[in-house]
Image (cartoon, rainbow, N blue to C red; front, top):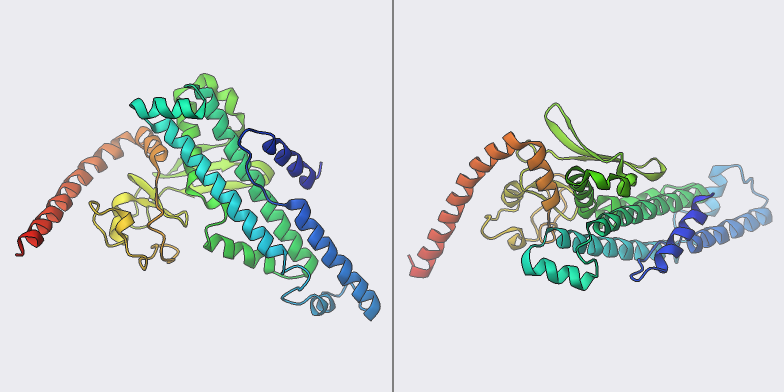
Length: 333
C-alpha cells in the first residue's frame, strides 16, 4: 500500500475519534504538484523542450514556481503549525495527568474520563507518537516530491525554515518526554509491555558514560537524542528543553539565559540565545522534562545523588544572594 493511501486511512480513523487531530493535506498537496507537472509538460510540448534535460526544466519551472508557491508552501505551513500545536497540547495534558498528585489528579482523571486507567494512558502515549511519526513522514515525502518535480532544493530549504520556526514535529520536546514516559512505564509495569509494542526499539542507551534516547520508528526514521548538556558537558540534570528542542540542565540553562534559578527561565531576555543553535527568544517556552528526569535518576543513581548534593549547595547560595539583593534594594542601601 502506498504511503498516501495509508496516511489517508490513518487520518480518517483519527477524525472518527471523540477528539480528532489535524493532519497534513497530503492528497490536496499532491494535486497541486500534479497540476504543476501537467502545466509544465504542456508548456514543454509547446516549446519543444527536452523533458530529460534538468537545465531546461529548471528554466521553465523557476526558483519560485507561480503554480505551486502561491498555495503549496502556505498550505503546508499552516497544516504543520496545526499538527505541532495539537501534538504539543495533547502530550502536555497527558503527561500532566500522569505526574499530577492528590486532588488535582483525581479531578483531571475525572474530567478526562480515563478513570485512573493506566492502560489508557499508555495507549494514548502510543497513539500520540504514532501521530507524530505519520505526520513527520508525510511532510518529508511531500517536500521530497516537490523537489523531484521542480529539480530544486526548495523543499529542503522549506524544511530547514520549518525547523527554525519550531514546526518540525520530531524536534518537539514533548516527543522526548513521551519516549521517557514509555520507558518509565515499561520498567515499572512490565506486564503492560504488550500494549506498547510500537516502542520496542525505544530505549535509553549509555555509551561510555554518555546517555542518549534511541528509537527506531516507522519508515526507517531513527531518533537519537543526546542527553549531554553542551554547557557543563555532563549528563543533563533536572533537564529542560528550549523551544528549539535542545536540552540542558536547568541550572545551566539559567546561566546561559543570564537569570538566577529564583527568577526562572521565563524572566530571560528575549535577546538571549541558545548556546547551540544561537537562535533567540527560546527560553520563555522552555519545557521541564520531568519524565526524563525520573528516567535518568533511576538509571544513574550514583551520579544523580552526587549531582544533587552539589546543586543543592549552589541553589541555596543563589537563593541567599537573591534575597539579600532584594532586601538591600528595599532598604535603599
